[in-house]
Length: 78
Image (cartoon, rainbow, N blue to C red):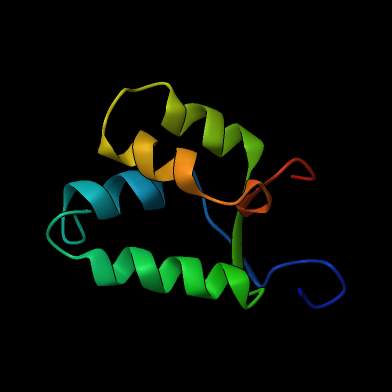
């Protein structure tokens, strides 16, 4: 799926948090989150397990979104 098994872009915790807080809230702009999932499936973006753990530390909508993602979205390889 990825070029040589590596995504082109690795997304950090801040990208998810700031997107949710500022311009791309899960309720306000679901198209962004759908787009992000599509880019993951295309092998363009991914994140790491440490980011997943940080995002799951809160019990909020973003954590719920993270729980719904494919296990590969937050790779253990990071």
